[in-house]
Amino acid sequence: MKYVKPIVRILLSVTLLVVLILAFVKMPRQQCERIQAVAHTQNESVILSQADIESLLSDAKIEIIGKSIKEIDLGEVATLLKNNPFIETVNFVHFAGKKLVIDYTLREIVLHVFTPSGEHYFVDSKGEVVPFTMKMKDYLMVVNGNVSDNFKAGKKAPGKLQEALALTRKINENDFYQAQFRQIFLNSRNEMELTTTVGGQTILFGNMDNADEKLENLKTVYEKGLSHKGYNTYAQLDARYKNRIIATRK
Image (cartoon, rainbow, N blue to C red; front, top):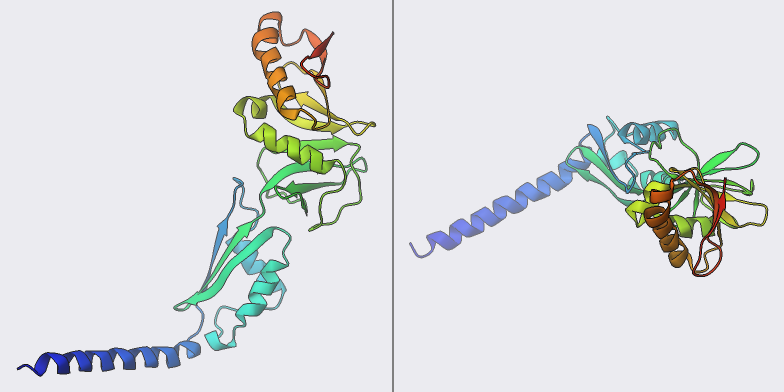
């Protein structure tokens, strides 16, 4: 009896090994039955969905469904996705049984930019230009005015857009700022002006020097000043000067 248990364990181990070998040999011959695209995004809108991934593969003449696993070039699939302007990283492309799993992270889109010529595009959280798509439904910060038309997807956003992005990051960190300021206008002096959602004032913000102080001063004016005098009292608020806000009546 003392030899029975070791023999059973050996038989089980051999059986398991045989099963694994058979599965390993058989797997490449199996056909892929479906694709599962898993998108990770910081935006509410998923701008590259399962259907979009399948369309990308189809347009590139990369056949997946019905092909044997050994015939599918996973590197080719990964390269195609890495070259897509909406995808920041391809996390992995691998098979789970007869299913091809594609896991990827989309760019976090932050700015919606309108140029003087009527073109528009997006800028992501890392300051790179992203093509416009109707699938983006998020309520983004709008930037317009003296904006360069010289833009290309995948490249760093030109000029003052980097400063507009830095200001947007600060605005998005605070619920009050985010609710009040929804548009940045770049004027002819390349200074930033904010358009408000309440009151309709133009806010001369200037550049990013002392940005935190400017935003806090503006918040104080709205909460402790305009809330009593009326939000429509002033046509313009000038926040460019240290420790003060200059208001111009309508």
